[in-house]
Amino acid sequence: MQLSHTHQRFFSVAVSVIAVSLSFGQTMPALAFGGGSSTPLAGNAAIDYAYRYSGGVYTDVTAAANSTTANDVTVGSTAANDVLYIGMKSPFDTLYLDVGTWGASNGLGGILKYEYVSGFFIANTYKTLTVTSPSNDTNLKTAVSGGQTSVSFTRPQDWYAAGKVNGTTAYWIKITTTGAYSTAVKANQLRTRAYNVRLTFKKELFDTYIDDATITATLNNC
Image 1 (cartoon, rainbow, N blue to C red):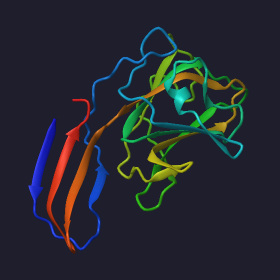
Image 2: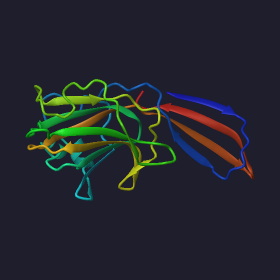
Image 3: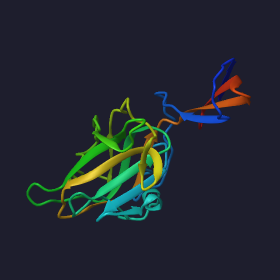
Image 4: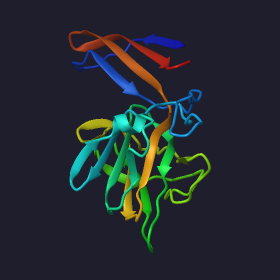
């Protein structure tokens, strides 16, 4: 579905096309997507970007996050301060996990911290995500039948696709192991529930002003 609106605007700029991504509180239907278990993993979007950060080194694990290979993505680590970054081109509010190995800890270990990249002009300022309805404990230490769980959170108002992780710009969440696990949490597959309505602003240039600015809103996957 497309909606178009044309109007007159005048600006002193030298830009011909500007693309803007906005979230509109509307999600697309869930799609079947095979996980490590016999039941398709929930969610409507594959992972756009995933990086693991350990020992000062980034490792691209995007392909592993989207595959159904068992235990190929470390979510909770045996080393404190290891990080899993999940990035999407559109805002999202739920991370679905098909867990192959549930975490275990000795004493006070086995703790995950969930954050997001805040700020439009100041990238990589991290703030705590407000987790609203996990279907299992957010530290992923209590196994559930079938191995599938999710972590839902309130989409922050100051969340913009301005943060960069390993040079990649996206809507990022950061999952940090603040307390090391004795047995690492390993996922077979990850998915998200993404809000994928985007606005594209197309502008024609005439010397020092822009005339006939056309705004086109596209609802993807409708």
